[in-house]
Amino acid sequence: MPVSTSEWHKWLVGIVYADVEVERDRGPRARMRFLVDSGAAYSVLPFEVWRKLGLKAKRTLDFSLADGTTIRRRLSECRFRYQGLDAASPVVLGEPGDAALLGTVTLENLGLVLNPFDRTLGPMRPTLASVPARAGYP
Image (tube, one colour):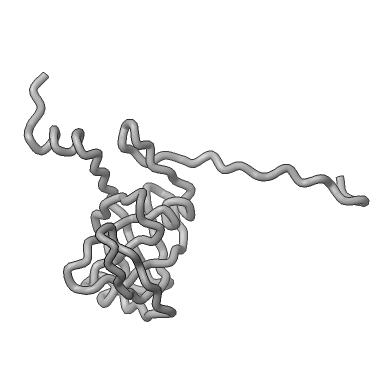
């Protein structure tokens, strides 16, 4: 079966995108396409999007890039909605030129994991540690 160049490229490098709605609590919303990045802890909102939502920085963190460079970015939080799931998550406030990334913290808050074999997002199967019952509790 022939595969187009764009489909072959997606299969070869395993790129996964997700269309997600983001929102400041009880505020403006935006729907956008995120690159799912299983190597990133935090999601990144592009500059224009977080400004439109009216997000405010809550703290600043240093991040290491793949080439060893350290950059500083501001963090906030917003709500993420994906296929009926809704969760708050920390978010990096991107600078001009920063791409929209969906990181693992947001995925976990939504109860999702990335399946690297078929490049889909699916429900995670969380585990709880067994905790012995205390006296007086069943």
